[in-house]
Length: 404
Image (cartoon, rainbow, N blue to C red; front, top):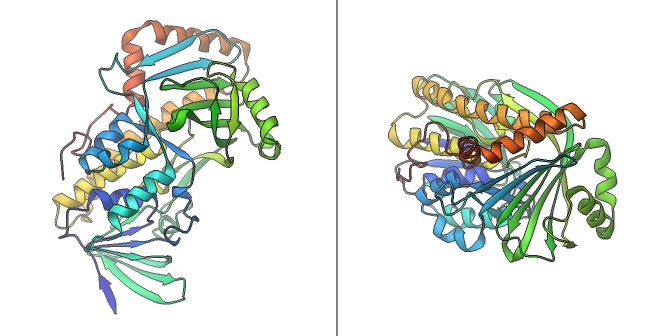
């Protein structure tokens, strides 16, 4: 027996669940979601205790999906951004009042967002969930796409749809089965993530401090905490992860300084290697890849989920407005729209990492001059702010706060 759908989504993590949420009011679209992890099991990496920096543009999309009011009590607003370079003069300060917005961005824990998304989408009558289950084969035909999935109990099921959306992460099995190649650049760095508490109020200030081993971010959270993303060289990762809490705090304080006060407490640490990956095509036949399956960025400036959410908004609009969203010309248009945004964000993040992650003296003076210039020149500061807020370039309906 073959189960027929309009849309199949592989991956029910943050990105896949966001796409279901964007389509929640469109019961005419029959959707299947295939997720490798059991929901609420704690094994779904999208829903752990790390945090996401949501851009102002992502807030607009969540508002359009009717979810922002439910999320808002659990978030902390970023009112200003302080950018500095360790060991050099020069600072850039960006404030929400200059951009005439309530906040430049928001910080929310993955777990909080995940629980809200799952509560919103798992009971939808037009969505069938196959979890835990994995994709085993894929056949990309002219008029439909067919897959075989396998459940944890070993049962095999055939699914067919007009469009398959791969949202199964950086190691996407679906991308490989579809025959999509990927480019990868290893930064030879790791991100160490932890929540910390200091002895002074954060006042909604986000700090981005560049060091010779990579950027170090302190993002304001609820309960007067910071979400710390500490980029280090891979050879130092194991040592830092094995430090006692007191040793970790002391070394982090030495790297960051005292702008945010004295660090008093740290929570659990996570680490993951950093690399840039990009699918050389983001569509093939009736398959489209989104989120980390299409692009994985360095965490500098926190653009990962925000870029993925723009993928979600664009493909959701394509799905809603067309009877056959997998039609080749429609996906070609989607490809052209998203590649431009992806590559602009990549160039910015990659350049920031390579320019700032070193201790060349001459380049240090140039960086300092650049930070001072951006701080003094209002149009440059505004351009930097709008990029951070996800407000550059073409905007689809959800970004413009229009319902689908």
